[in-house]
Length: 355
Ligand SMILES: Nc1ncnc2c1ncn2[C@@H]1O[C@H](COP(=O)(O)OP(=O)(O)OP(=O)(O)O)[C@@H](O)[C@H]1O
Ligand SMILES: [Mg+2]
Image (cartoon, rainbow, N blue to C red):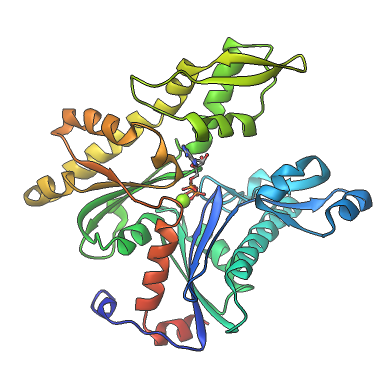
């Protein structure tokens, strides 16, 4: 397959789509030039009143979050996969179906956003977490098949690497909401031992931040969405940072509180597992090439935007012989762009086979 990768196989009748189907957001880059992103939640109106108010039967993304009190809201992906798809003993059959349905609608919606009406046929490459099991991959394929004509599921950090042309002696760390996906690139398709998935990612930080704020400010009325918002605006891991001061309701009235320490502690929690995983991936790499991979560590994903993260990881890596860490320019679209590049490079015969 790598030999094929040098030529593009574009069919003018087909819209090619690269999708990063994330726990937090689904982003697509399409061959018509459009790039779209939507927060991976879908809501159905709770009753006739809310249906009338919203003027539709289904609401997605930020709009759904804004009206969450009027909706049955579902965020179908958790830890990078469709919730319950790997362990069906955790929920009722009805619930499992609902989550699958929600994932399907999000894929459909994201593709719909990228359509411009010029072509009917859609071929998609979808990025999924590095270690998604066969069952999980199958449920992603099922979710996509209603919206596309042919689909290939690849590992998410691999699509990031492919998009950046970093196929050789590089280590990609994609830090999302549900998972941190690490992938070692050695000039061929990554194998099992090249990939690690950690679940200490963005959602984990949000929950920890919420817990810490509640512990230190028991009267503060704060939700998980507020904690995430605080993290996105202020998240940092360095020792020096401006104070993080927020307004949070206490008994219904806004109060100004300083949560600098809580914020730092919660954001820093993702660092030790990443350092350990990187250390292992380097140590088990061919010794001749260890120095090169060390100097080629790239952060992607929404959480890569935490202030000071690249430097703190470099500090932590000193114990393992050091390393150079950089960030991708576009954390939201790096995965989708890479997936589209892969879509172009797949031979047409393969797409037809998968139909
Ligand atoms: N500016 C920011 N600073 C820090 N974190 C951010 C920022 N913007 C978004 N995030 C966080 O990044 C995470 C989402 O990243 P991303 O969009 O890469 O995830 P995803 O691909 O949907 O998730 P996954 O890959 O785990 O399935 C969320 O936890 C979000 O709160
Ligand atoms: Mg992701």
